[in-house]
Image (cartoon, rainbow, N blue to C red):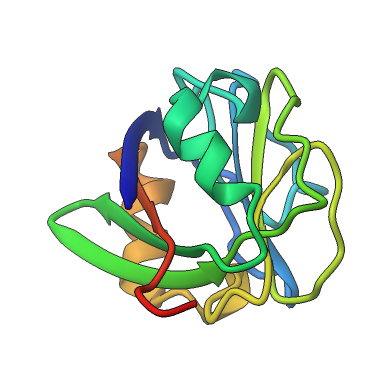
Length: 144
């Protein structure tokens, strides 16, 4: 069983991509230097707006989330896990975390990428204000 959704956002001149444990995409229209995990603003969806089928799958401990981040002609693939503890009810934010910490903004835990690990060329594209396309695909692997 698989489910997908796409979120569209854009970069900003203050995108830093330096946070060591998370990255975030937000509906907020502005960004300050304190938002070192934020890679995309003005998103068309928050966690609460994701496709209901995707949300249902993500709320399963067996779920595997593959996220494709596309900006400036570059693609970064991020692998994360779902969790039965997810609420996915934040209206503005989507957060991927390296840890197991869960909040209403969390869409992926145990992520293999965080803001600081994203390619610098990708971050530079976002600093130029390029469109950011976030493709999320969750599935429950066979035999789990």
